[in-house]
Length: 320
Figure 1 (cartoon, rainbow, N blue to C red):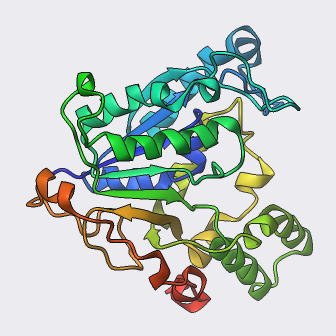
Figure 2 (cartoon, one colour):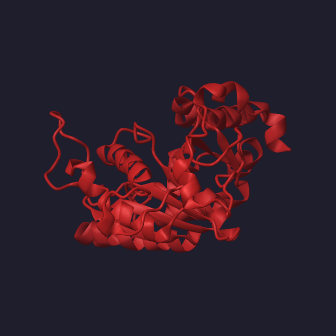
């Protein structure tokens, strides 16, 4: 049985900043991993002032971002599909968006290519964003809404022209930027008596993560893939400078010894689960039929665990 994971992202580069080590690790284990980019990132700006391809960016930023995405895809070893929607950019002060952009299209329309893709790729696991989009960009929020509609509808008789129904077994939200990760790194810095300037920088970079309540249910140990994650992120050179403070200020060896994980929140499951998990495919059995999934309930009891208490990670455990 070949396990299949589908990760739905809003823009090219999101896949490299959210879950890239996870994707690379599963590819190496023999799983099929497909990344979806809902838009082409057309509304983005050049965020790397030292970009070597600046002339290309000024002439054709969408084209450059496609080349960058292909480079990141090759580094991670994943499959990739574009849904073809136009980047919405940030909403105006009155909340309006340009007509025809991704977040302006009704979900029941924009979901159609994703349902077709699900029915052809037949993933066991779907990873996407929460209701806030990870951060409140209109395209991230629309990605959340569209992914939930696909989770609900891809396995039904809705949209019959888009292929045979396929029920996905498990649905996750990305939680790679979580409070446990931030606190573990900051604590290890203090323990190592790190240089004050570095500590100040990381407190600033990671501080906002520590304010978020922990909802992580699933931690994957992927520290050995952090270098590949970083290489994939740097492939998006128009968006990320090689010395970007937010992404690259944490010393990698310190990160691997303090929090060598990527975190996820299990939102819904059509197969039995046991929380906390260490594998997105936990509970998935090749003998389980689509009919059995169709009659299953949601096995996730969100009231049965406290993410902060039950899944907290101590430094001794992290460095073991």
